[in-house]
Amino acid sequence: MKPIQTVVVGFDGSADAEAAVRWALSLARQIDVAVVLVHAVGLLEPTRHPNIVAELESATRRLTTECGVESSRVRLDVVDGDACSVLLRCAEEPLRASLLVVGSRGVGAHAGLLLGSTSLELAEHSTIPLVVVPNVEPVVD
Amino acid sequence: MLIVNELHDDSGHEEQGHPERPDRTRAVMDGVAELGLGSDLEFATSRVATRAELTRVHEGAYLDELEVFCYEGGGDIDQDTYATFGSWRIAQYAAGGGLAVIEQLRARGEGVGLVVTRPPGHHALRDRAMGFCLLNNVAVAAASLTALGERVLIVDWDVHHGNGTQTIFWNDPNVLYVSTHEWPLFPGSGTPHEIGGIEALGKTVNIPLPPGATGDVVRRSIEQVAEPVIDEFAPTWVLVSAGFDAHRDDPLASLALSSGDFGALAKKVGTFAPGSGRLALFLEGGYDLRALRTSVASTLSALLGGDYAADATTNGGPGSEHVVKASQDRLSALRLAHEVAVHEERAQ
Image 1 (cartoon, each protein chain N blue to C red):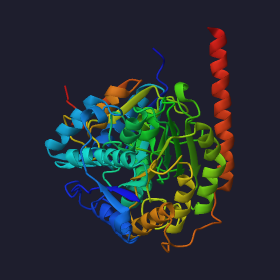
Image 2: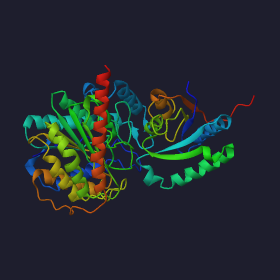
Image 3: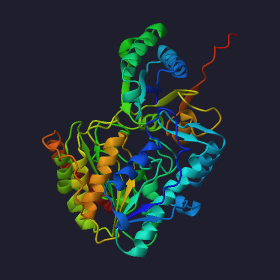
């Protein structure tokens, strides 16, 4: 198995995506990996949410600080495309991610159906390991 | 002679506030009406695309899934794409509309086809909906023609790259896919380096253009980059993914075409058809209703020899250097692919 060097996290600003980002950042605290938050810009976003990139940049800084990871190891990439295609492309050049991390449900998704579920689509098509992080309170032993 | 599909009721495919809405097909038909074609306008009986026709370009499992998703009430498929209870049936009619128009063109042996259906199709992949698109209408039509031994040119002048159509025909030597589109923009694909798969090298032509590019740049890109490839390919049919969202008033993109530019572009693309009755336009994007109406009228008038008074053509925008670069990048990609093929042949 190749060492994990770059972890890509799908980030649309939702609470589910934040849970995924927190998981990836906690991994980064334990092993030396770079974390790239990737935001997919859909057809409608430039008109419906023109300020979202600034909001996501701010959220990235906040989450990085809260999770205690050096900011030099975390960055936000904004990429045109639908979330599934964009995240699948992250396994290729130039990112060559070794691990994909997503929340269990993105904005507008439906549980239990492949259609409308980025995580299930990725599970079917991804060529690199995928972690799907549920947005629940951690169980305390 | 203009042949249009009979409009199937598409009012069941709508989501509040979404720009891909039923008013769009009405705006297109208003544009047709402005031409006053009278007996030169004929309607092709609407029909659904059969499963056999759809599975030429879509996976059966995806079709099943989409049908169930709709009949369970639908919802948001991704951040852009929705389906409703009625969407499956409407999408079947959207794909069937193109087949009906082509059948009528073949039967008459003359005329220009216009497929006025929605949802649009050029982003839909073999196994996935995206970018407002559920079924790839133009791909279904193109596949029906290649099944008859035809060589099909698809010109996609929608402002967004038609990633679905490109992917579906990536390895098909009987389909030449040519796209002009704004870059950077959704869906993030469509570089000049994307030239087709090993079985169809050179049969994909992408010309990305910067925001603000005007009609002269788009026409020049077709003439300088695509036309030599099209001449060599010698299509027997021409299908156009006719999005009108490259219009300067469109809310979803930033190219700067006028309605007159679509007429000039259509006139050029029309010359690629080997004869009458072998050209059909498929509605893709276009979300400003006035721009849609006037651009459709301008496009059809240019193809049918009318005198519609469209807005003046535009020129002087950025992008000339992008046209040159697209040509250079495409040649580099072709050379590289050739070297790899030679190397692999020697290694065997």
